[in-house]
Length: 76
Picture: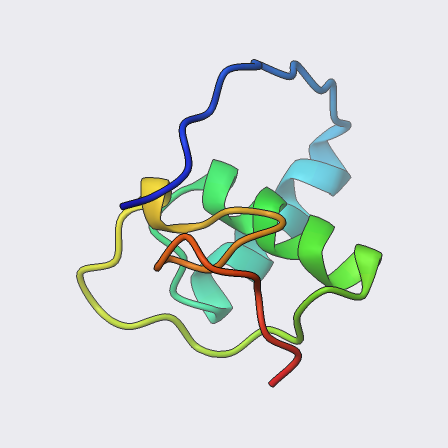
């Protein structure tokens, strides 16, 4: 079961940043902007190198410090 998210973070982006985020999201087949942002955070923190997401994945399946199985995110 995914980790509970207790904190909401609001981020302001320029149109170019939003376009880049959406481009990344669609290339990686992410289910939402939130999932894409969490994946980018994982990458930036060096926790996990991204992979193409399975069809049918939900935004709640993407955590920053844990994988979809609520375990530590792998480096693979």
